[in-house]
Length: 141
Image 1: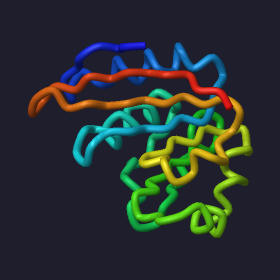
Image 2 (image 1 turned 45 degrees about the horizontal axis):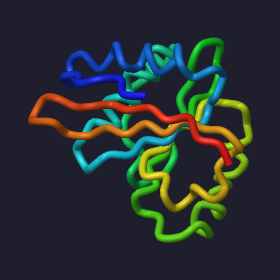
Image 3 (image 1 turned 90 degrees about the vertical axis):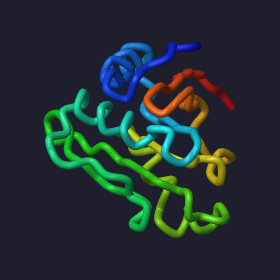
Image 4 (image 1 turned 120 degrees about the vertical axis):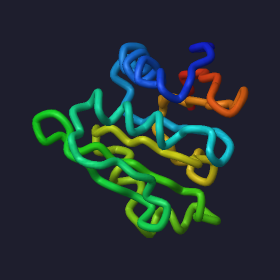
C-alpha cells in the first residue's frame, strides 16, 4: 500500500496512519537507504506509542528499549552491523520478537528467516532532499 509522498516534517501523520493499519501486528521492519528517514519515522511512531524519552538509532547497541504507554516496552533495533543470523541469536533477538511488544527493526534482511508468521514491512524511498515515499506491506510466512 502506497502511503504517498511526505516531507520529513509531516512524517508524524505517517506514524499515526501506520498504527491505524497495523491490525495488532507488533513486528515492523523498515527498509530504506542510509539517511532515508527510518529512524525519524520510528521516533514518531514511538511518540504515538507514548514514549517520552529520547529515541535514537541503536547503531552500536543493536537494540534500545523504551517505555511506552503504561510502561509497555517498545524495542528498536538497528541490525545494519550484523553479518549473519547467529549474531542476532546471540543478543536474544527471538525473545524480543515473540514478546508481544512492539519491535521496530531497521535493516531486517539478516533476520527475515526467523520473523513471526505476520509482520509489517515499511519501505522509505528518497524522492528529494526533504521528500520521502512510504509504502506498507503486510507479509506472511
